[in-house]
Amino acid sequence: MRITLVHPAGFNFVPGQPDFSVFANRMPPIGIAQLASWLEQFGHSVQLHDCLGPYAPPGIAANAEIVLATEPELVGFSATTSGFMDAVDMARIIREQRPQTRIVFGNVHVSSLGAPILEHFPEIDALVVGEGEGALLDLADGKPLATIGNLIWRDENGKIRVNPRRDRILDLDELPFPAYEKLAGFPHAYHLPLFSYAKRHGATMITSRGCPYTCSFCDRTVFERLYKTNSADYIYRHMKYLRDRFGVHHVNIYDDLFTAKKQRVFDLCQLLIDKPLGMQFNCAIRTGHTSDEMLVQLKKAGALMVSMGIESADPEMMARHKAGVTLDAVRDTVRQIHAAGLRAKGLFIFGMPGETPETVKTTSDFILSLDLDEMNMTKFSPLHGAPIWDECASGTSGDLIEDWRLMNCLNFVYLPEGFSSREEMDALYNWHVRRFYDSKGYRRRFARRLWQHRWSLWHIIRHLPQTIAAARYFSANQAQIEAAKRDFARHPRQPLGLQPMLSEDLQIDNRVAMSSERLSRRQIMLQVAQATAGCAPDTPHGTAE
Image (cartoon, rainbow, N blue to C red; front, side, top):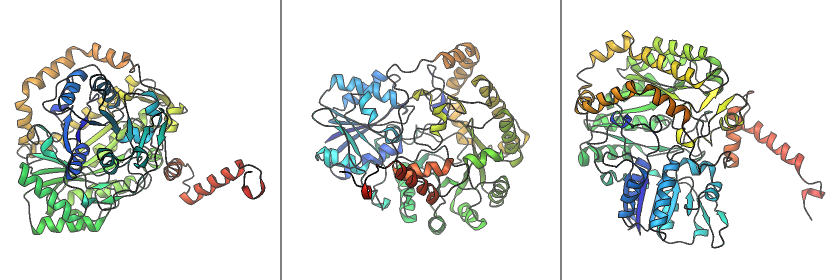
């Protein structure tokens, strides 16, 4: 079957304004690249189109024409929440011009919302929820729709059918390496975040699926509760493949938590030490769960920087959203990272329920006290399948603008009750960012690493006209930009108030994560059982006539 897989663009900066952010960070869509190599392994012909790619044209219609030119029999859109409506608009054009083409959507947005998506968007034929390889292969092989696990579809009468979930892939080493070669411009025209690497070219890898933890802000509806990993040998061969085939010498590993299985990390480090590839990599660790020995081995193996999710420095916010992480543990972990000769990057979220100007200033003070090498502060966007979604959508502790296109972690769609306006939040966010990058500590570290940053600086110089144009545009059009953010109209076809479709296990996990009393899964399950029993029909032995 001829299949085209698409990564829609969505908004990456200010809605309705030029998107200059891709100059600083353009990473390949690993998900559809992985699906492409999997499907071709079974004899299907697959093409990829990245609407954020270096050679993609601007605009929905132009990108839809590129997809149509591949003459696909099946088009698969991998859409996040913010990119979903772009994908719908492209799907409508494809449906009008090529009505016989089957159109399928996957990724986190449809995995969390499920069947109601099909009710609102008739141009979509089916949804693949959860892990995509098995369902897409069954579709490509022409199997009866009723037999395909992880599929939500319409029957011949237009009735929406929800098939059971299929078993997860237990051995991720069975998957071929992503089809990077199908991405136009890879790797030279893609690039990692500026100043996050010292060698070029760069690429990204994902070496696990799922996460063993439940944070209030994370949506786990794709992989649910099962955490699986590639082996150390597979990761080593994958890195070697990227180096030998594409000239890649730096890899960002974007696992939710790379070091969750410690022996795997030690085994990989030993392989990289015994048989060096001349490559560097970045990865994520969990505060308080990393030893001096592991950090030393990561450094020897080629690690440049490790990231850790901290989210906030306010104790109440941490207890509510990032259970198990303390400020003392964060300080100790940063010291351990620096002692091992690694760079430390802190990851923070601004604007979750409970946030106030005071908690942000506390977090900003804490960030500067840590002497971090890099930090990223995300603007909070609630996700439909996350434990915190119900609270945000209910309006009990703040105001939510449920505009899917703006839910990209770059806009304050949620206004906590501790703030008077989103403009106040933007001003405080900008204050902190300037404060961090203008600090003496950051400037001193940056100056010491000018040679290490040479490829990032060269990238800026190569795009200097665009960079200057961007600076002039945003300085000269502040009023227009603020008006665009304030008056941006929701897509006329986007529904409101759809309820997440969660498995019983995830419902329990979410209740555990949001429990103020820190109840266990067992206690929550008992409460659910008691509530269910209290609502059961009053018939002998619980049976119905």
